[in-house]
Length: 542
Image (cartoon, rainbow, N blue to C red; front, side, top):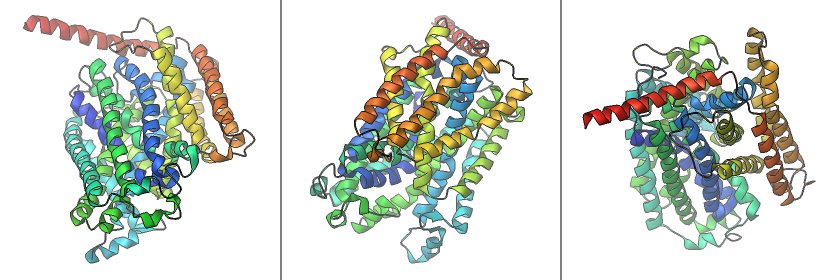
């Protein structure tokens, strides 16, 4: 199927997910969340986990039904046609491909704060939170390393990533233990204007803008790698759930350790005034935990690089999937005859990564943009999985989630709320980034003589109206979320919930048995045949 080797089991796929999730987010996320929400940032991580888990459950059923390379840019096309499929795929690709350079930026930023005399030259790599010319060279070098580790084979990628991910789990664990033991100030949780110093709204905003959604974004990597999964009906949902659950435990404990390790004098004027270049390393230096300082500076390369390596692999599968959807040049959909990987797509993503590295040189700003673009792409997951239960009811489902009729609309609502929490004007800015891709869609529609354009446009129009509606509510909404306070706090979120249900209903009704369902059925039938062959072989072996 898809000419890709199925050699990745539950452990390898979970490591792919965890390797994507635990990147630069753990190095910066706790600090950014504490700045925004204070000690209550602990709840921001839990809320973020709930949002992502509901979205991830919807995609798990889809991934197990259609285990193909770059699946997350194909599913919506099966249920709603090419117009909505393109918007979802474009938003998802923008969100994922930009993670590769932001991980390189994170490594260089930590590198710039090396405290040793022999490393004084590293101070010139970053200025005012952005990479300098020298910093860009180092960042570009890291992008090339990520590329080369994926260039030859999925097997090499899998082995390298599993090793790196194990390391990435151990280092946060050591950091948590060291900070809790060496300098834990329990009074930090109640001093500095209390446990929730900036109100509930700040806890919600932290979910969307401090890097929490960004940090959990890697859950979709096992789904995009489904074409290489053994027994996808079992391995994909276990890998998705397992990676999210393990990451949540790590992130919450890191947030607790960070809050407790901060010098109480630093938060006298509020949590918003704490500033670090390399948060956990700076804390370790302040507490004289010298061995941890060295370990953290090493991990500042390993953790982001592990995520960069993982995303280099998964984004090439996304471009491969977009080419199969006829959104990209055919050359990007070619697989290497020996290694079975889309090398041309990898070169294309490397070029795009260089552009993002040059345009966005700071971790915080790009993490916010990635988070919002990701949320826009996630909106379609719950809609697609429920639509296909109607239009593709005869499809083989290795995983059929119980309670999906409740899980899917809740996932849609949670994603909509989190998008709103990202605050105006960021919400409007990201909408513009999404719209930039539409000329590409129209170009390929024109090449196809606009065949089926009207039907596809009608099926996806709800998304266009939804995005415009969300931007309007964000503009008019509570000042707590950057709006003009015409819609008051509390009422704004109630309005988002009601509007989300209306658009969710519209989206389900817009779905139809598209012309792309033949391809979906073919993939699904091959999966079913593979399952039957495995069962026959088991009986024969007995």
